[in-house]
Image (cartoon, rainbow, N blue to C red; front, side, top):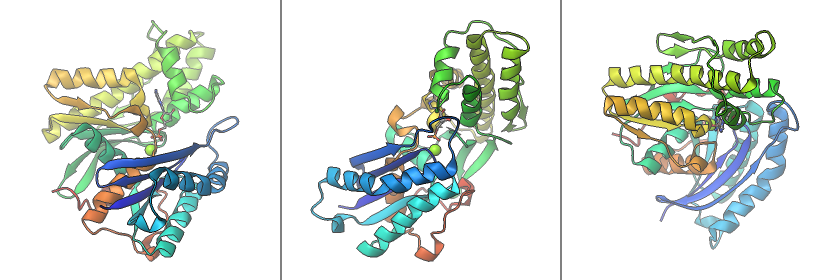
Length: 329
Ligand code: AMP
Ligand code: MG
């Protein structure tokens, strides 16, 4: 039996998991909650540094292994993410790999979101909409690579929601709070809908939403509703175009923003209209989690893909299309 320890800590969540072949054995996490405002990279990194020992000890205790030597490899999020946070996790993973004499596996965080979704939902070859704090991408697999078919030209959809939420004095993460307010909105007010080919822009939305409140005096609920309707329609449009161009009849939704019910509903309707299957994994595997890192680490280890220490430097701008996908054929 192969056992992998995975550690995630690209931004707000420090999370570890121990998995065997294809079952989750143990999970532990510690979430950084900014006292006010957004995530400060150095403060989040300090949180991860002070919690790491506890989280790793807890996940190992939970796994009830006879000893640490039962772990076959340690996987970690190598990027993309916040540099200071990535370095804390990478340092710990390297130390474990060296002291236990087990392989180290540097994992692309975006692909981990995709692969845990494929695993949990049984999707075979979907077009993926990956929506998180910092990232927004539409991807599909072809010839050994997850190709990026469309993406944000500026900020991720999660950050756009969080930014507007901060303006409303709502605490981090703002996405779920905007969702709750939006569900009470009834009137659509104008928001900029910016799709350029297969790419998107969200930075103007937060500003437009502020203006809708302060200049045009619309109700907060209506502004949240309109913000969501606009941003999610943009996402649905490029996802549908990707499915048409790639001739794919499956769609997988991944990343923290995927928890949003309205986004799920819009994509589900689009898939139904096309006769395609829509997949979204259970909520706990949507936001950043250690299990997805351990799971992708397992797939990589099985095909002999490991990371020598000298190549384990963190990659804050690591793009999913830089990864050679060895575990799919
Ligand atoms: P991740 O980086 O994948 O963990 O995703 C974090 C992002 O997901 C943050 O920007 C959150 O505001 C956002 N998020 C979480 N839940 C929801 C939700 N229900 N609706 C919209 N955004 C959400
Ligand atoms: Mg993420």
